[in-house]
Amino acid sequence: MSNLRWALRDADTYSTSQATKKIGSIDATEEVEYLNQKVNGYAYIEYSTSNGRKKAWVYANNLTATKPPREIGIMPVGTKFRSPTDFPNYQSGGFHGGTDIASDEGAAEGDPIKASFAGKVVDVVTSVKGVDHSKGFGNYVKIKSLINGKNYYTYYCHMLYGSVKVSKGNTVSKGQVIGKMGNTGHSYGAHLHLEYRVMPYSPRASHVVDPRKFY
Image (cartoon, one colour):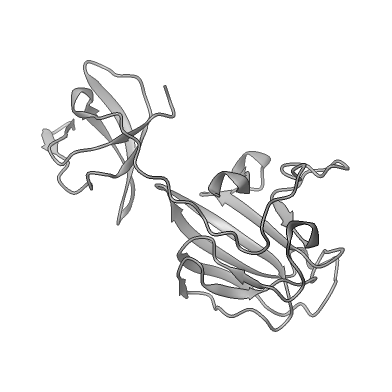
């Protein structure tokens, strides 16, 4: 039962070491993760607020097992994902932390790349002029987004030189054009490498997420 989702009501209560309090600041449709089995009628939950993720003990009888609407991402480029999938390993073998979208998926060099979700730009590289296998992701945009109650870093990689349209610190809207598909960095042809990382991130396979789950 560790992955159930719940919707809270304003009248729900939770226990602390000091007192029993009402959760009046959580939206009625807030998505919440059920972290633990019920203990003496209470459930341990985690939820999102404007100040970040919080955890609390909630009286389980006040929880309603209704799943809030799930936000779906906008396809950044192309029309589909690679099949068979290239996540988390290439078909030829070897770890691959994201998925590649190229001509077989309906995309072409120079096509506009859209932000799949709203968020804040936390890193940008714009200096890579072409194929350079020492430059990894090439020109890329890294966006921090709150997606269905959890924070993720999204990487849009190998962008065309001179095409990046956002800067570090910018806020981007869902569907906003952030650059164009290119062939820069460690690349063997024009494509978008799309990668989702959980936060906090460390370079392990368990910290990347199949991009297909967001669409």
